[in-house]
Length: 268
Image 1 (cartoon, rainbow, N blue to C red):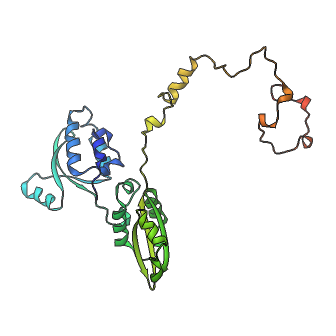
Image 2: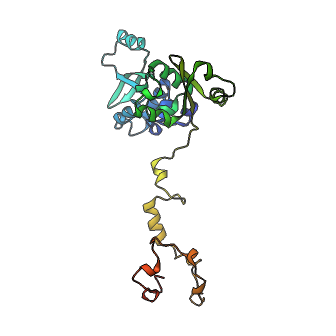
Image 3: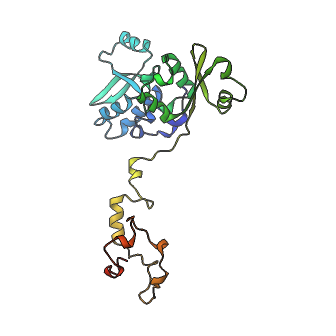
């Protein structure tokens, strides 16, 4: 997997989520965790942080701290490090989870792999083509990638000026699946990443206040009467037209058992 520079924006273990954890590498986890030892809640919230990281990493506590045991963990490609946990410091084996099968794909990691990596995973798992994937897997893939497919005879697939040539020129990666004398081509291109705000920001309004705070704040503000007519202003009711208001009743006035006189001036 191509290393992403987004981990530079993760300055604290408290900033790690199940999504951006995929931007980290094993040494990043060790660095952030050891730095968090200075934070008061690290020992109380250790299990919480472990649960978040386990989405992207294999994390195993070494029950026996002996050189031969450590070597076995390292032989499995794990980084062994001492991490503050609970009431003491324990050794853990840490390894980034591999994405080798389509079942390894998730909404959390799909935006953290390249189109080339996706094609590699699909090629390793494919047999029947794009439609052979479950709808759930396709939804996950299309969450992070623009996907197009076409099935044509071999001799027509790469015809000059055709879809194949245009997609490749546009930066799409291609997987070709032979089906007898025909070929299914699957084109994949990563979607532009969109910045996501935290739930705290989502709950704030444009003034930076949370909704519940803004209600109290608004109660102290004077009523906005800027666009309200003055009491002395004469309102030309004849100037009101259908464009001045909207009704949700789809009926003609003569079909309703009411008259204009029956309506209060405030309702009209």
